[in-house]
Length: 189
Image (tube, rainbow, N blue to C red; front, top):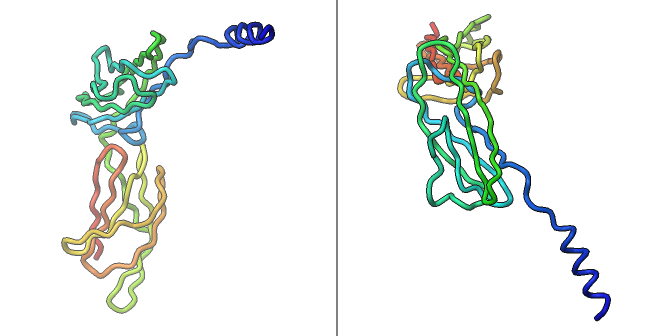
């Protein structure tokens, strides 16, 4: 029994209080692109082993009551984007022992829709084979082929310049959407 007391004292001395602030970040809007003048729904997360008790965006509480105290919390908020420049969002999170973390996130205002460049077209029977590139200053989110009222998404990577090859009937259209939600439609002959 004599050796238990020193070990207990040693283990107690090794316990460290939580001095780390919570981690906080945004997961949407994707790529940080926002179309000017639009109301944007942003989503984010905060994490701390002691539990997150508060998340504020630009000084306003956004953490739902049901999420308070959890180690990993999710939150949503709306922001009105101005017509030009950048929007800076200040995220603050507080954990269960009073540590505070802060992160500033800049959202790029993107009024420019993506560009669909057709480099070459080949006709094969009743089909067109179209080669081209979709470009965007912030990032191409998705490209679809529209035939009548049916949209077929193309399996393409995301990026600022995305090459494509697609087979389509005459009269179909390519539809490109960027990270900010701007959209371009290019009819095929």
